[in-house]
Length: 189
Image (tube, rainbow, N blue to C red; front, top):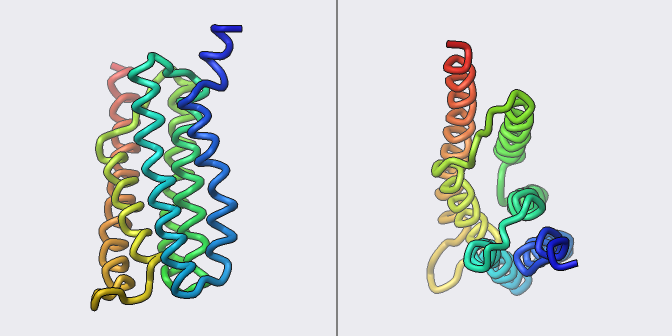
């Protein structure tokens, strides 16, 4: 039971599952938020995203890095971020085409990694891909807040950060494809 527990439902994986379970809560918070609920949703989203660092910390510190964790952690990130972006569309806070392209990039890279794994090539998460996730989260928070506070137009701040997130998302996606085709060319030599 000890080894199975380490491989299955350990503390880091439980934290990832909590992050996955947070997505429906975020949906409920963003169905038709006013000023207070927008701020609460942004605080909730920020707190949940910070637990991403926590599960990674515990996994490395306690030697609990598992195959399940390697699956759940990025799934939780993608689920939370895409849920947030999708819920911001009907609120008029993000353009649908931006979200569609960013989600398309996620699907394309996930598919590419599956094809690469089938060919025996491992495409690890790149530093650029990790920065993409951080910038997406940082752009979502002010877009969720949306309303002005302390004389600061949070929607404008979020919109500027969204441009950076979009460009980084597309760039990192292209980087994964370049890495894949380079690895295929090197394997053929």
